[in-house]
Image (cartoon, rainbow over all chains, first blue to last red; front, side):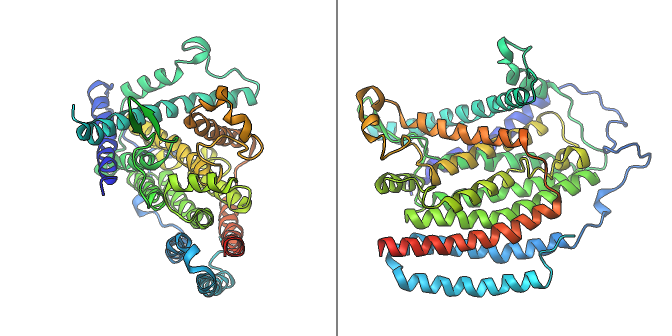
Length: 118
Length: 349
């Protein structure tokens, strides 16, 4: 456990870095507020758009769902890879079966067009 | 001073300070190197006004960003807007805690390790912490209340999660060969095997590197920032120190991806050609070269590749990017894990 203490201290230092940097900048930075400066960046549009209302493609959601499925799979791979020496042939066959099942899901998602972006 | 206090308190504190200073210094001069190398690739001179050959350019940039006015869009979600750059910056720094820069050395009768901690789940730690950065990017893009930022943030999130999967598979193939998740252990496994893992795992190495470039949103995968269409994407509205944090985090992440490539596939701090030149490295003249030198040299090579790509590759279109990630890299990396597992089984079993 004592290995994690330096990491914890370091994390706290890392967290304080942006806080210190932003507070220091707050003291010395220039400031000349102006209503025009508070407008969102636009290319010559008079009335600024409101991004909070913008609709975006459902595909982003699809990508997120696919990511959750396959990322859990990668996490499962790591303990298996570490103990692969001891699991030997049994572990190999087990994992191939697991990957084959996921591959079926992947092919299904592909065939149903979940991976198409256009 | 009694030994335990020295060992437990003082040395980690010194290491933390040194680590932060070194990382921030490399990041600062990486921005200078990038501008200079890009300039020479395009037959320009690059920054050359501040100090001899422009050496003080990063200092001038830092000062400028510090005193620059901090603009917050009127419609922005103020608190989230302020926290987002910190959410990107902190994980980028934290990951350096487990990067082994060299082998343990003796100083004043004590063994000092040139890394903060050698934990047995170092790789999981890095993969986990690196995933946190995407929150800051998507929150920064959303809270700006600007359509360009929102698009950039969404694109970035989709891209980072898509390329994280083949990257995880590629990393797993290196773990298969090493049999451990400890960064130090992986380098030691390469020393014991007398071969760096990029040779037997060339496919995994290639996949890792492509995904690493995509994860950091760099050319040719820099769609989230695409100047021509999205005017810098998720950080369109950021200025001053908040922008600087995004900027520093990007370069710190490049360093992490390069350092991971060195540790996982290129022998970490070991000198090059461990077999052919073993006799040469044992010579007294060369034996004193610290491992950290080799580590930093290899890392610099990968960082140079980043800049090289930016100077030479055109940008992908977004649908092409998703195709490459899901239809090419994903099955390839899956096949790679199976092949490497089979190879390890046949060789060791």
